[in-house]
Amino acid sequence: MRIITGSAKGFKLKAPKGLDVRPTSDRVKESIFSILADRVGDAAVADLFAGTGNLGLEALSRGAEQVVFVDNSHTSMSFIKENAARTKLFESAQFMKSDVLAAIEKLAAGGRVFDIIFCDPPYNRGFVEKALRSIDRFRLLAPGGMIVVEHSKHEPVPADLSHLAASRTERYGETLVSFVQ
Image (cartoon, rainbow, N blue to C red; front, side):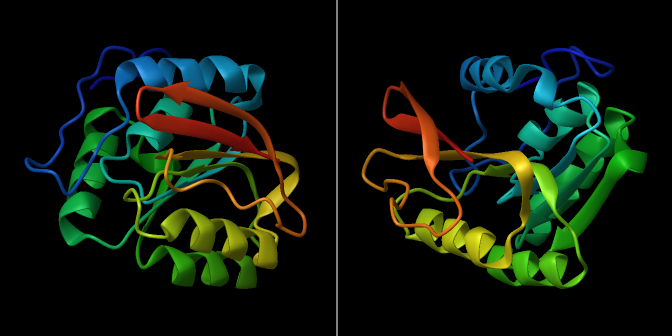
């Protein structure tokens, strides 16, 4: 797992051992950023269920203005901070060790909105629906923004959100990546 392009191109990211964190593969990440294209430059980004910080750090490397990394694991947050420091992207990062739903509410209460939101929760535990409903309810996505949801084919994006809808879904083996606007 490495930063693909930008200011931190080639940096290898550290990840905890075991199955608690499932980092996005370089192939899937490359496809995601190809689809996002010019949306990343100067974007305000949230990386929910951040794990290693893989997606958010890639966004910073490609010119995102700031990324808020959210994860409830102390171990994951330590790896995200270490990876941000090693890639020299720490100054543009904000870190929230928190439950994602609580973080969404807190960010919204602070008036924050994001151009891009990465949402890569543990598979098949109901987090996709809960996170998207919370983002929708608190209007955390800026007008014209995009949510990138990495999820299992067994856990679809809800079709009945008030302000959001999936505009595109790509399949990579058992993994789906849905783009929600």
